[in-house]
Length: 360
Image 1 (cartoon, rainbow, N blue to C red):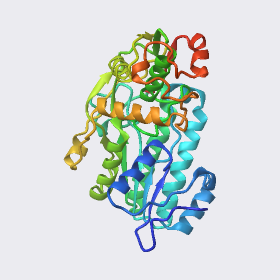
Image 2: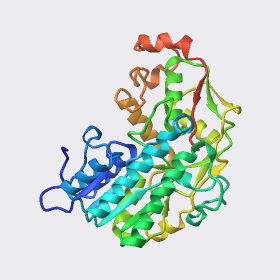
Image 3: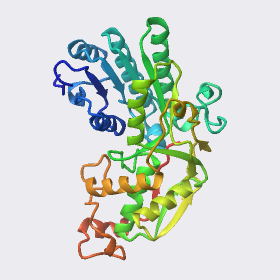
Image 4: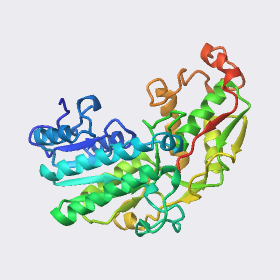
């Protein structure tokens, strides 16, 4: 199993899921902090769903610190289409990594959950003790149940074996390296791509799933990564810790903000026949604030930076646009430009009304 080592004699930090949105951000944060390059393994070389392979990896590499950022993730549509995979794959990944980390002497493990673990109608902003106090949001219950099992497994290994595992529950995340697929992405990257493609194609309107009234909180993934490093260094407790901004906005407000940043000048519409998901989801962040961490990146600044990343990396971005993303510079937003590709021109008549998916 080829791996990238943290360096001879250094404490070995393993980032599981280093190619994903969160894992890649943790790798960047470790670099900013001056830490040795972490241990990483490409997915074809290590399938975290396979217990024997995971145990062989831990036995050979013996990491001392683990960031468990690997997971199967997606929006409402993906959760509805693949409930078995969302439950099975996440349960397998978590169980295999947590068990192997304990068995082979990892000193500390950080487990990354999700705010979808909380009840659909939890009191807002959501405190950590709201866990398991009511029914989950049906549109992503498979993922939520898996994440609840993961954090409870961490607590069980701590209680029974004294294993030092901490659990972070981030709010909705976005940033460079996000999934921009129109089939299974989350709401913010889906909106970025929809408005961008609509601007290039000159579409008259963009339609977003749902009523636009649900409220969501968003955290830039680089802020989450900084929180992960901070808590890995300064937190030893068994209780989960919410990580977010503590500030939310409606999906309609978010869509208007993305529309402005992208420079799309058509109409914004909503389709209330499509599911909204949880009415409101905003985390109480008193605990993480008391531990000395606060977010730094404002939402507008973060979306602008993410859009710039998307424009520059559309070809290789997960779920990115098929056509080059930077075909129409700001000076060419009115109709087809001389530099517009045949792909965009041919899609003008075919794209029609577009819809961005919302993950609750």
